[in-house]
Image 1 (cartoon, rainbow, N blue to C red):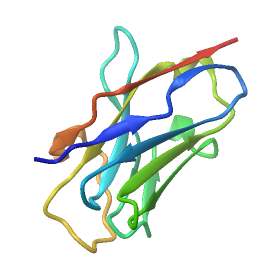
Image 2: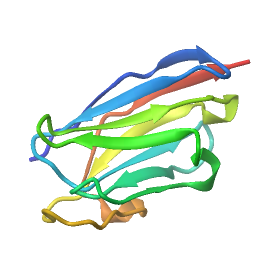
Image 3: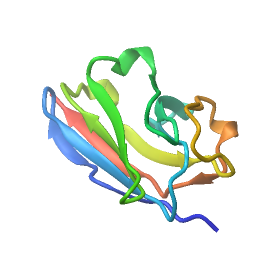
Image 4: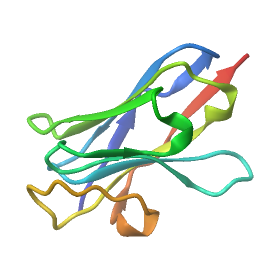
Length: 124
């Protein structure tokens, strides 16, 4: 069983920054997704096991950065210049069975385990 523990959400104003963290039991290819009220869960960012490759959805490119520290089994999502449309519950996800790879994954159904979610609220 893989446990993912997220932290770092909160309420901020537009233009502010936040850093989300997701601690896992081992290093895995990881992704961040978000779900706003009344909307489907959407891909935000993903990073390969090695950390050498990363992907982002278009709306966050240049504002968000995904990174990882495999010594701490932790993945981060640094969010900058936050906008009200970034308001959502953010989930981290892990894909098991892949080690040392430079591949990242963007589809929710490619991930095996999910965190409990952390709320990010951005106000004007």
